[in-house]
Length: 227
Image (cartoon, rainbow, N blue to C red; front, side, top):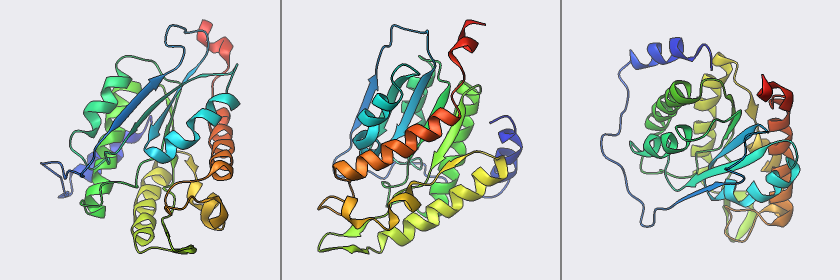
């Protein structure tokens, strides 16, 4: 995150597709969970995402037991939503995180992909402002499949691919690590639940294994907290 300001300055110098008013979904929700909030002897990790993240959170926490304390901010809001960062700051102002694993892209279909990109840039600026010491990991958004034929991707997956590409360009430029969850599940329709979006037990276990591994690669040693 150390060199993010230059990129943000360049992007904001371009006319951007800013959403002044939120595009509401029929049901909106937010779920905040902080385990061992009263302790500070281990690094703390924040998983940001939606119901996909909530699905693998428990298994990730088990993988990181004894190494890090875990928290999650899962929500139906997309980074394009002008109120998304208010919710994120609620967490960043209260806790110090060593790693932030960020998976956002399966909501906010009422926003354009340009608005998604620009919302992501603004969110990363908020992370830099309030959690600059945290290692940021970007996770690619997972595909959407047809309910009647899980081997077939819906048209919405085409939009997911565009969002992933736009995000990847930003992350590559800033040398921010990417956790490619799309690639992990792309050829495993059998890991998908009947709704074509979420994952069954096998899928969530596979996602949790990969997410936990990417976090462990960026986790500071416990000894560093004592300095």
